[in-house]
Length: 115
Length: 112
Image 1 (tube, each protein chain N blue to C red):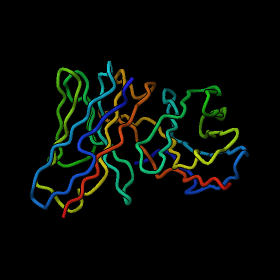
Image 2: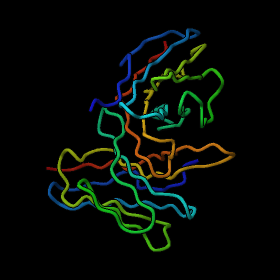
Image 3: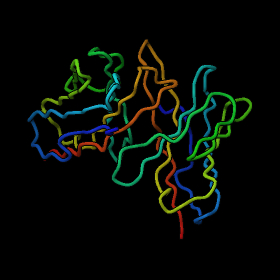
Image 4: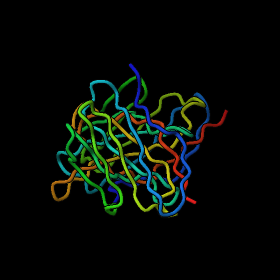
C-alpha cells in the first residue's frame, strides 16, 4: 500500500507570495491533518479535514487555510508569506477522525523556505 | 500547550534495552497515550499507544503507571536505526476542537 505523499518536497518563495501544498493520503483514509514543524516551536497542529469538512483547527492565523477534495486529497494554502513561515509542513492521514485511538501516518513533508 | 514532559535527550548502546520516560500528570480518564518517533529527515511514524494496561507490539512495549500519570516506552534491544526523536503525545480537546499536541520529545542517540 502506498504511503502518504506530499508535493512538492521543496519550495522556495519570497515574502508576500502565496503557496499551495498538496497531500495525497493512504488509499481508504478519509482524515487528513496538517502540521508545521520548526526548530523553535516543534510540531504544531494546523488543521484536520474529514469528508471534505474541517473538523479541527489549531492556533494559526487566517493566512493558513486548507481544503479536502472528494477523493480525500488535501491542499493547504498560505497567503502573504512571512519569513517565519519557513518550516517543514507535514501531512498525516488516518482512517477515522478519532485522534484518541486512531493511528496517524505521516508523509515526508514539504520544506518551505521564505526569502 | 504540551501536556507531556520528557527528557530532552537520552543515550543508549546498541543491543541494550532503552527506557524512555514520559510524565502526563494532567491526563484525563479517556486519553490514550501515543508514542511516535521521527527519524532524521523523515515525518513522524507511529510506535505504539495505550490506555490503561501495558501494551506490546513488534516495535516496542508501553508500560503505563497505575495512576496513568506517567508511562515508559521500552525498546527491548536498541539498534542504530532506532536513533530518532521520540514523542509522547496526548490528545488535546478544547472547545470542540481536538488535536494531538507534540512536545519537544526525547532525542535518542544509539552508540555502536
